[in-house]
Image (cartoon, rainbow, N blue to C red; front, side, top):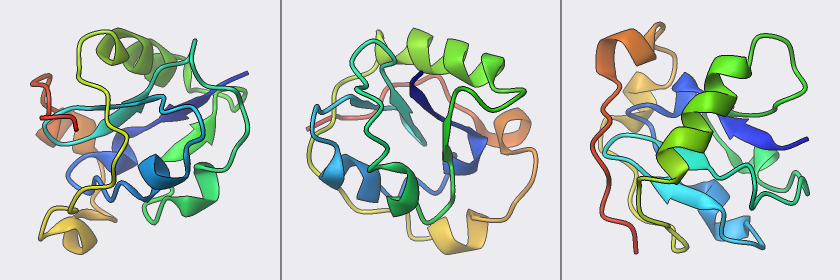
Length: 112
């Protein structure tokens, strides 16, 4: 098992999860984070820290797409180990639906 970041993170990117991760398995895209599944130790400390509830165990039904996306982009995006600033409109974006289709960017973030 591993944890994955879902589309609820897109344009929210609060980064509270980064601060608590003991193995630094988060990677930063322009407008979301992902988890490297091969680095995640399944400790679960990140899940309750996410205000957008974007982090879920990959054992939940229907998360295959997110496991693939996290695997792909964690190999391309820079590692992030320090919590940065959330976007100014993060709270307003928290409950928006279909964020992947509307807002996903494959562009990397800046990392640490």
